Amino acid sequence: MRFKILVQPFCLLLISNFVFAADSVVGITKPIHDIELSFPVDGVVSKVLVKEGQRVKKGDDLLHLENELQLKEVQRRNILLNDRSKLKTSAHNKEIMAELMNNNRQLHNYMGAVSREDVRKIEMQYAGVEGDVTSEQQEKKREKIELNMAKRELERRILRSPIDGVITELVIQQGEWAQPGKMVLHIVDTTKSFLEVNINVNDIYSRDLKQNSKLTIQFKAGNNDIQKIGTVTFISPMVDKSSSLVRVKIEFDNSDGAILLGMPATVLLPDVKTQKPALNS
Image 1 (tube, one colour):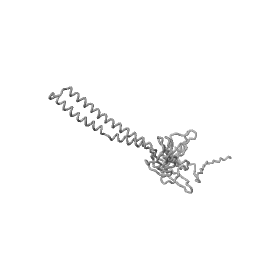
Image 2: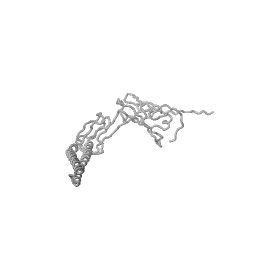
Image 3: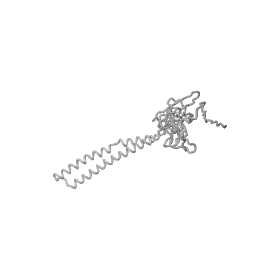
Image 4: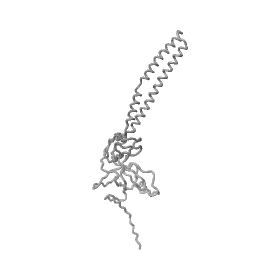
């Protein structure tokens, strides 16, 4: 008589002194906002307003380039735009010519005291003055656009924070030359973070893993064991052909700063809901 011995496979995963069954996946924690900042123009750094480790708010000034010429240009354009003396003079002349033209038309139409030729001369003079007013009005529109362009050029020499975050790296100092597009400062928002993992496509279906699913994330921080609840915010629509893995992002709150980002963490997958045949990758 022959006996068959069935061995049920059971896999354990050891990470950072934690022991988990195979229904857990290890990934790396990352910040949602991780930004390298640079200037769009070149120039000498005139002010450094932050230091590494400093927490900043969205819109805070971080670095300034020398901007005296651009500041003077903004002031010059502002003076030109606010100078309306020529426009006022042209508008006043238009009112005078309009009154004179109407009077001469009446004298010509009702009394014949003014010839038609004289009326036409007045009308031509009025048209010229009216054209001056229109030209001055258009000039003010151009000056407003040019002022906005000068302000924009000045703004390009001020680096502001696009997010609430922490300065993690500062690679330039006052007096150094900044090159356009070259990173000068690194800022990270650590309050909201995510764990990026790769999960087998069969587990995605059999465990009913989907958008907004709540999952437990476990961390080993020194001698402390930390648990956080994360939310699935992204499941890749593509499966890696060679490994049958799907990239998944799980966001979690880190406003308490308990987790140093970049460290590994383990997410516990939900229980198998239904048994379905394995999908071919």
